[in-house]
Image 1 (cartoon, rainbow, N blue to C red):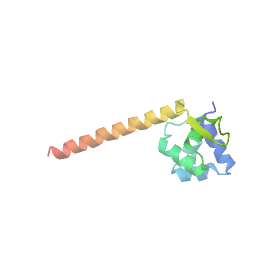
Image 2 (image 1 turned 90 degrees about the vertical axis):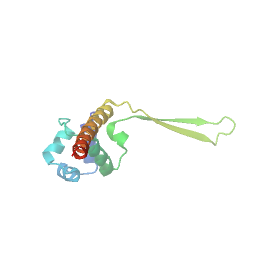
Image 3 (image 1 turned 60 degrees about the vertical axis):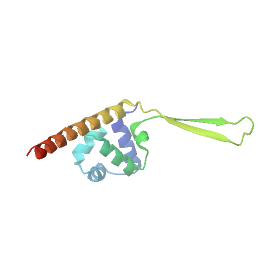
Image 4 (image 1 turned 180 degrees about the vertical axis):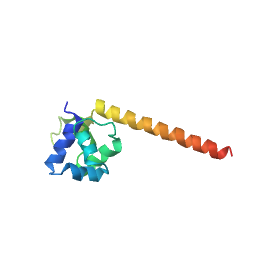
Length: 123
């Protein structure tokens, strides 16, 4: 499996975007973006991944390297009718790790909000 940073770099280069341009689009420094491409960052978020997919005009699954298979079934009585079934495998370790990280952040934010609410209501 190709590392996510390498896939991101490939898409950036295909569009002739500089690292500076993509970093500015994401609202981060060029150095921080460079670390994304070489898979040496802990600040890679699902939000940034979504923004990259939008910038590169690709499906999020494609950026994550999630394989899709297309199965075509033909009706034996009428060969003109075909059903296309696209299935995605959402078991990509990279996607799972990103989603777990985002979920942990949401739990932290929820705890902070509950604490603020409790402080406000106890006064």
